[in-house]
Length: 232
Image: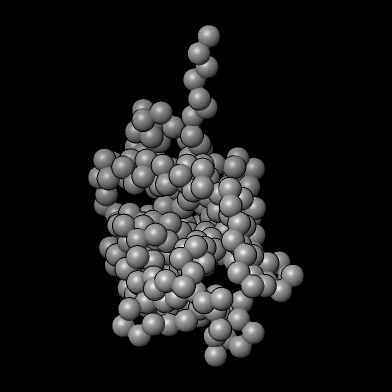
């Protein structure tokens, strides 16, 4: 007897009943299992208890807004998060991505667009899981994808998901220049429309966590007008 694979679980968080009803119906028609919440606090609790494969999270929520909920979820989980934003929330979109969201969709959106985004993010997660079987050690720095762990000079250092991906790309390309565009594509995704300044901010955070002297970095080197290089 052929056993069907378990359906991917999606946590849908929005306080607009019409959006929840429409999205739930279409996601379930596409083969997903859907759990819904109407506020940020419930979203954080359900993300912990249900262990979804993906979260769709509105920014404007009661009790705890979507950005704070995203931050709380990211403390314990690297689950893909797609934010729902309004057209006039440009600052919120950038902030949400920097805090750990993987993508955003602007309201009003087409159902086809959001289903496509969900499928793309889940495929990418599966690829990431398949590749998490190696660790890289350079000097006193070891990054382990299978455990999602970074150790620096023998100490475990906590990284946000985007920081972890960024450092891994730099370390696996050690000694080679990695352009800003390549980092945007590999870490944030081909459809990311953010500014290169986002990379600079994350590079600064990484230097503060791994460099002995962040103002005079030994490992993460800026190559003017081109990108960055990880040096041993």
